Length: 173
Image (cartoon, rainbow, N blue to C red; front, top):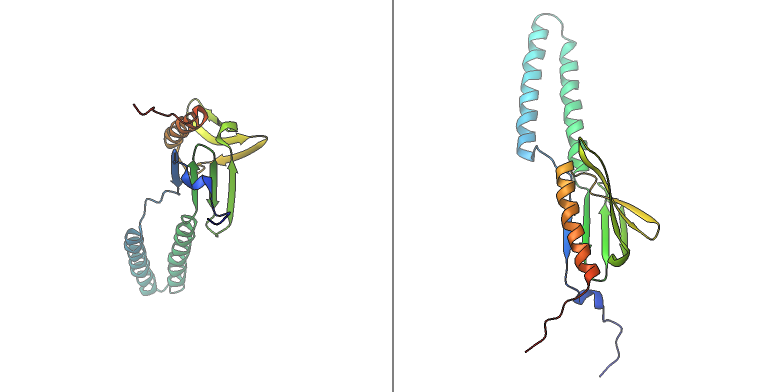
């Protein structure tokens, strides 16, 4: 028998809660191509109409408008690459956030010490969710809507309560 330090007890833990939060985008790639084709066609037809009326510099402005709209959508699609992973096991709560630029932020703590704080408005619902543990405060679920935050908070609180309750053993009879 050989001694090894490769044993990681966290790998044998059941996952109580696991969620990946990503920004919502209502326009997919196909819809984007259709929209840009439509905008390009309208800009071209309107530009040609102005050119025929003698206002030929307007064609450049229509092209510039289409280019700015394309650029704005590309930036919007790039920001959709951000993710936030939240995993709760009986011994660990991990938050892993990757920005749309690839910057990584990880936060880990014992779920026994974590509290879920909610700030909100009676009219709009939950506006912010925070995980608080030993003086550290991490905002989670920033891209979710108020109803989604309420559902997310309910599921996360249930998992934290299970982790705080501890393992349950059923005796073998």
